[in-house]
Amino acid sequence: MTEATDAVQSARAAADRIAKAKRLNALLTPIKDLRKSLVQQAQSAHPGGVLYGMPVAVKDNISTLEFDTSCGSKILEGYQSPFDATAVAKLKAAGALIAGKTNCDEFAMGSSTEHSAYGRTLHPTDKTRVPGGSSGGSAALVAAGAVPAALGSETGGSVRQPASFCGIVGIKPTYGRVSRYGLVAFGSSLDQIGVFGRSVHDAARVLSVISGRDPKDATCEGRDPLRLPTVPENLDGFVIGIPKEYFPQDLDPGVRRACERAIRVLKELGAAVREVSLPHTAYAVPTYYIIAPAEASSNLARYDGVRYGPRFDGTTDVAALYRTTRGQGFGAEVRRRILIGTYVLSSGYYDAYYRKAQQVRALLAQDFRNVFDRGVDLIFTPTTPTPAFKAGEKLADPVQMYLSDIFVCTANLVGLPAMSVPIGRVKGLPVGGQFIGQTFLEDEMLEAAYALERAVPALEEA
Amino acid sequence: MSVTREEVLHIARLAELDVAEEALPTLVEQMSRILEYVAQLNRLPTGETARPYLAGPDAIKLRPDEIKPWPMAFGPKQLAPAFRDGFFVVPRLEAFGDGGDE
Image (cartoon, rainbow over all chains, first blue to last red; front, side, top):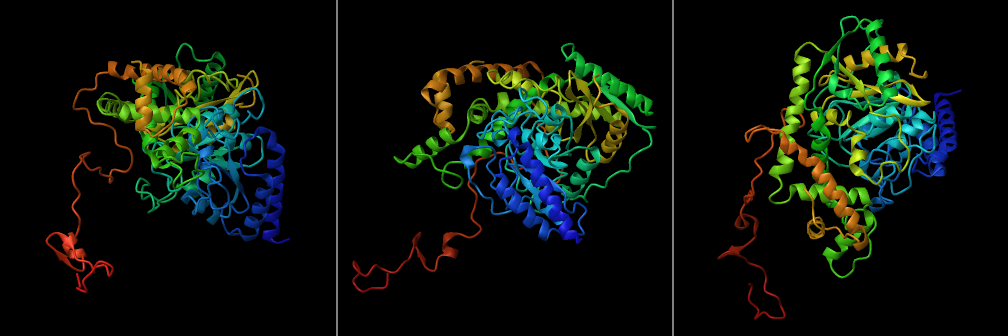
């Protein structure tokens, strides 16, 4: 049997698994188109590549030549990108197969994948709950075993939060580790492509392939691709900080128990564990919800019915065309964020909101520097304050929805690498623990994650 | 910090976004709640001169946020085949011309 035959078989098997997961509404690509494309890709995939034959699903806000890129929005329905995102081009060069486009909150704005124009994605083990978001489709497909890995995007925790809810690994690299070229812009100073995997190794392998310099993205650092660390025997010599602000009184008791058990495991592995303080943590969510909408209102100004996507009726004049297309093409959450962003950037409010938020962001970054400068290698926290919540539970109250990202959005604000690793179950629902690492030291973070993954009973009740 | 219906409509006009009449009451209520929530940053002293955070590699430098005319690399005189008294010199239209070149 030739290598190409192996890859074609792998492609057909992946298509069958994805078809079985159809009830989750995790994939936006029609299965018939996907099956045909996967076989074609397998026949021409690069046999020497490190990911040869590996199916990798891609979030719908990352540009691909093969499939539509709608960002989960009506305003980009049927949009076909004329180029591949750099991360996708690197996957293909490594022999991976692009396994379709996954459902997400519209333009990655949301924490539950309920804000997609193409219907909500279901949690893989409890259909009454959300898979998290905004990269919920990618997370659900990986958790259902349909693909070993998937790409997502992070602006405020949109890979780690769904990874935690679905019981898989999710990594957000340092800002500048992975090219943003071809990632549809939401909050440009926050956005990064991230990776989901069923194991730390799968996710890390994909991250290593997509990382590295890219002349097409000025914010991508001129570094070599990430080198994967070996799996450590223990964590001797590691100093892990536990920030007290991430364990508030109203933290879900099950999440608290799972984290305390994971911390005991880290100690048993040889790590020195210290309580630390990140005093401005409470200000992270309000800071995020000024900066992200402000940048979004600017980035999404380009969608007006002229250059991209369908044009909604507005024939009286060009301004009416813009307003009607944007009013009907964007969903409620995106419209709300564009309005908030426009408000905080408008004359008289810029200093009070946007400039102030950028200053607080500097204070948040200083909090982390203070901790790392005192000899702490990594920080460990819960990824989310609760396990996956019920569908519809937080839709009416946007602030409650935003608060589900309280432990994850800080890493985006300060550009640090972070990842979620499954650490236990609470009433059958997965719970994740989060490592936050130092700038461009993903290898240290991965070492600790490898060790924790092997030792913690992630499938057992905490 | 709450917003009024008129403020939401004004912001929607700035954002080139139609807002349906029936969606307005919920939008006003939700935007007010979000703005009240984020206004807690004002309780945090940062000082007038505190440096804002800048994302990305150190090599990236932002220009000052100023509105100013951006000079052309070459003036119109250098770009035009013929230029006189501040105007481009073009061939005269046949229908209106008297047979001259300009």
